[in-house]
Every structure is written in structure tokens, then in C-alpha cells.
Length: 125
Image (cartoon, rainbow, N blue to C red; front, side, top):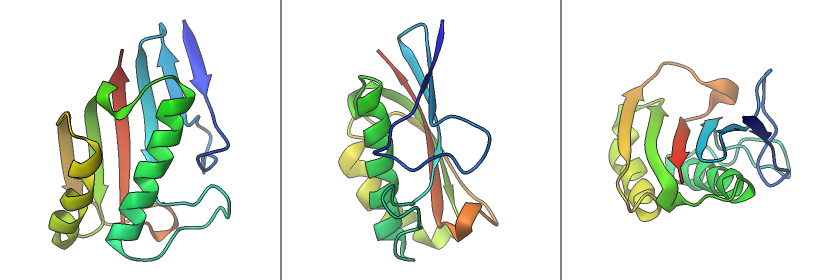
């Protein structure tokens, strides 16, 4: 069984996809989130710390809507516009992903709306 998860507490998808997909009630696939504020629809400040905090807030809202938490996260895919932001990004990331899920972290050349990072998540109950 597949259920599509959407919450107004996180920004709307910027393309033809859902915020997340819940499979068989126990595996959640969250689409990549960038630092868009759900209230304004705009990207937050242009520094890695502000955008990382907003991405985490967006992920948290989607996890909560589906009945999950950061403790359920088993894998993250992280995309940074500048690998020079890696240390600052990790400093914030490690405060939330305390279970240390498996992770991919790569640098990419361009992201939607000029974002500095994007994180996609897989969580399991």
C-alpha cells in the first residue's frame, strides 16, 4: 500500500512530486528538501547554517505528519552547492541525526531556487 504524505508545515513541492511517500505503513521516502520557508514560499537567508536549519525544519514537519521522527531515519542523501560548507553543514546536521544514519554527501553544481543544500531521507518504523 502506498500513501502520499503532504503537510502545509513544509513547503509545497516545486515540481510534479509529493513531499513524501509512505510504503506499507513503515517505510517513508522523503523527497529532497531545500531551505524554503513554508509560510513565504521563499528560500531563507543565503548562508549554509540558515538553510540547513530550514531544511531540518521541513524534514521534521514531514516526518511528524507521517508519524515518524529523526530516530527512524536510516539513510540520508545530502547535496551541497559548495563542499567548502561541509564542516558548517555537519555541525548542524549532527544535532538532529543523532542516530547517525547511513549517508551520501556530494557537491553539485546547481539546485532549485539557488539553494545551497538539499537533503532527501528514508525512514523506517
